[in-house]
Image 1 (cartoon, rainbow, N blue to C red):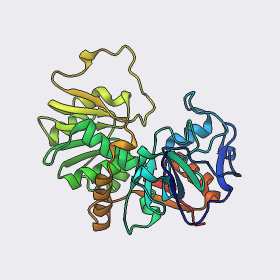
Image 2 (image 1 turned 180 degrees about the vertical axis):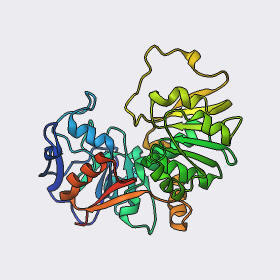
Image 3 (image 1 turned 120 degrees about the vertical axis):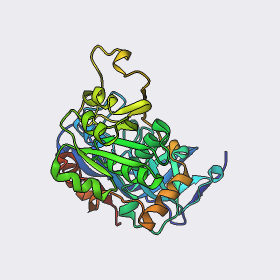
Image 4 (image 1 turned 45 degrees about the vertical axis):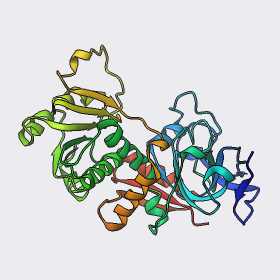
Length: 340
């Protein structure tokens, strides 16, 4: 087994972490002193600098996740920071800036709501940037999901038309900026006319107010139908989304913001002739270091916009961040930065 490469400063024996000891309300998020996680071979220990707050972590706190989530649990499905310790042959070095996400972190093993986290090496993405931690901390989960949906789920190309249904979500806003940087024409939805400006600020060409029947509005703008549609609202909207897409176009199902993940009495014949249906529920390995570097460069150059709702400093603010994220009143990503 290869020898580990470790930071010059030896990690302490204990750390501060937010722990969910039992399902419940915001008071179930408790700050505790816990042992610093011991790194296993093939894993990487990261000193956490920032992390985004996600619906998945709210679900874990409430006890509404599937059976793989057990308690007590340190939540957090994404994070950015610096390598503290890694296998010598991993290609990672101590002090290197890295991002990590998903792969059951914060679910079947402890996640990023802590000063240190350990994760498998294959879900670690190294990067270099001068962007601050609060910006980079917003990116991993939402940009990975948005990029994977567009690249893997839809195969979106420059010059094509894209509909994003659920456009004011963090993934929807991110998908709009990535698609515009690619050279696509973007139509995107909101249920509130007052939020159309948020879509325009993300680069959306045609903001649309979604009243549940969107196909008519889309066909007025694109008579033959869009080339691709990203479905983030869920199965309750899927039949109507099919009708917005041209023959041989593609719908990618990625999320269910409205909460409906299945279709009762589904039949394949509900899919219009020639329209393709795919899905995306990707992993960190779908976002290469080269693609992430391109995204960081595009942000620094001002071509991509990062939809950050609010930045919180310290683990003491995690309850506030989850409360604000759950309320949904402020669009964009809620990011916690660890200053210590």
